Image (cartoon, rainbow, N blue to C red):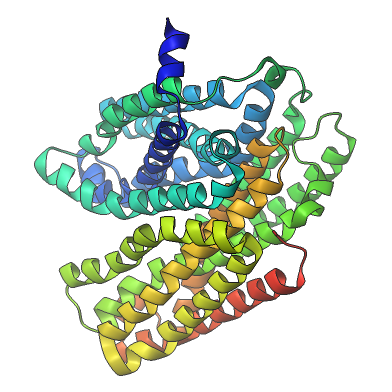
Length: 465
């Protein structure tokens, strides 16, 4: 009976709805908690530095485990692991909402991050199993749209929930959404074949541990100290660099490696990952620098800053599906280049236009930058996933999401430091309007250089077709 019900409702539309909701939940979990940090600090009698671990635990869990869970899905079956990830995310959301102390809340957030890592990695990996190859771009564009919607919705939804209820509601809101996602995934996603559990070798436990420790060291180096590098940050970076070498050595000797180094050269995967990291670094710069520029240099109040900052995510969400259709019609390789060119134009505009046209210039530049970003994402992700073999889509999807996450982490730290350096102010929060504007120019000049580097990789390197 259950198999008959699944067969009756299974189809590309409902399957994509399940994957889209999984992507929405994982991105919503990233953005919704930030707005509640001051309230949680007061309610849990904790310092602001301590409550930041509520965000950091989630981010670290995703970053350190997303490749490993993608590979695990390739081994044991993507459907059953995705169902487990949705269930874990939902149960962890209940635990977050019921947590009586900060330590238990942080632990629950780490479990929630593990569930989110599974959902992010396997949602993209499932596209090849649910839609025709000619519609891969549209599906990737839709997932990108849902990710943008979740990111944009988090702060506003979180603020409304805290105002109407309390901080626990920002976690409990995931529960009904998680239950819907689980039911849709259970009923609509294709069942794992028997071969899923036997054809892909064993799980690389040593490689998984080494990669997780290396990524954790890098993520902590980039986040501890909020961009002010000290001896601990340097030590963590050194540990991460050493960990990369040990991990690659271990992978060459493993019987069933987590990542085969040869994969990075095949079908341009390494080039695509590098471009993704560079682009994500630049996009994080808009989130780090934008609020300071709008409030300190242009003199906008908090409400107007929020409206101006929402333009990017809204345009990104609206342009995602269209970007996917363009990829399907014109090809991934060309659309990667077009997207990067649009992004270069956007960041050059951010560096120059707001000086003359104020907030209108800022919005105009973002309207150019964000559709370029969505076009790049849809094309790059589609090309990589179409080139991936059926038995490695999980790990490849995990690597794509990892490159994006590492770019975001790096952008928050490095581009924030570039902004502070460019402003030449001891404290950016009290810097003059001219100093903030100077920091804006330099930050997005550096961003333009990074995007030109990505464009060179996309033009000259062996990338997606």
